[in-house]
Image (cartoon, rainbow, N blue to C red; front, side):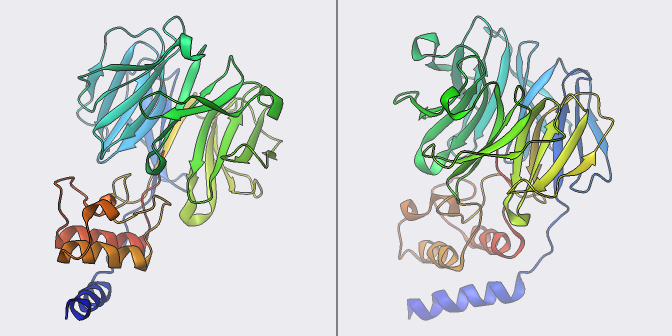
Length: 348
């Protein structure tokens, strides 16, 4: 009987819930201009959301908030419309650069270059700061960060060691992913394709964008022309595309995931640096994306429904618990259905 109910509930929601997705948006910060901005994926409807920022660097999205590091010694956040700018951490920082957000775990990770040479984490409100990695861990200039939450990994680039590295979320188990032997000279921003188990990165010295498997194999330069100080990359898996900031050229560009069809999206920007993609108004943690591959399959929907009915433990798909209250409700299953129909939000 429960199987019939489960299938019936799923089909009913698929039949009635087909709300169109809101417009996809690119958000970025301009370092020298000190601004937070957004536009549609084709570059239209450009908006300046916040100004008077002090050299912002990496930008991350977590739930309905944007987080960023300001090289002028702050970690800050704001609403997606740029309102309610808050200082989260403004002490014991020298050159904060990278940020990554674990919304479900309630943590923000941030890097500090210069003399600090640290990667730390804190609660989302800035409290409870913990040191994870230091110079004794091999850090010299840790900059850009990314999280692989399904596998419990923290990634960072270090432009002085010429490496892309990773560790466990607590900073233990440091290992090299890519090094100078793989052609890295000044690795900048990078993006993880968790479904494809790949990493894409920009190198501001070789003026290239590269791609490799997360085990370090299959290294390729996929964009080798037309770049001028590429800084950060974001992936749009739903459309098979990637976007990056070209700081030296003052542009944001797009290409397919194999590096072809390079196109200018926005030009004549002051100093585009950190960039993220937000799909509609959905949170960065995709509801019902049990395996963290950036999409919700029908089998994952069925799992969410079975958790709702009490037939399957929540531990089998914590992503179905959208509000983190330890249970799955009908509204959360509906959100997962919408993610299947309209796609997940882009991830940092």
